Image 1 (cartoon, rainbow, N blue to C red):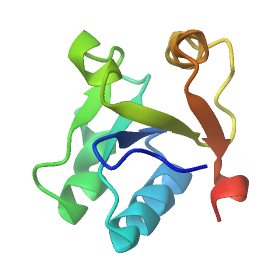
Image 2 (tube, rainbow, N blue to C red):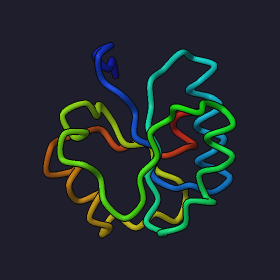
Image 3 (cartoon, rainbow, N blue to C red):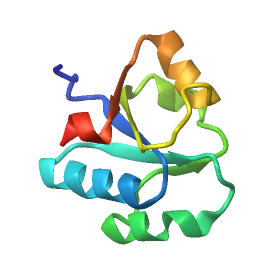
Image 4 (tube, rainbow, N blue to C red):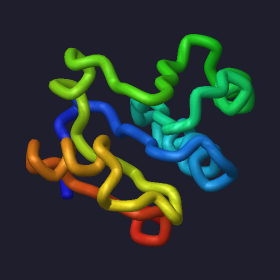
Length: 102
């Protein structure tokens, strides 16, 4: 699937797989942001080491970001019932797991 160049990937899950996805996207020159449901800024520290200006969100995603998202990249264990995933489905966004990406 081709993603428009002005769109970003949204990584859902701030754990080890999310960080692996971020590293992969960075090597591909892709723009991305990270979301995690946990309200703990320390989760994002390894991501910020990749890019100090990386957009990281916890608990909710700003409305204006949704117009930039081309696809969701889900870490294992993320429930499709999560509001962020349900919103992506409602918007018709592609939802990709780590196995499919790699």
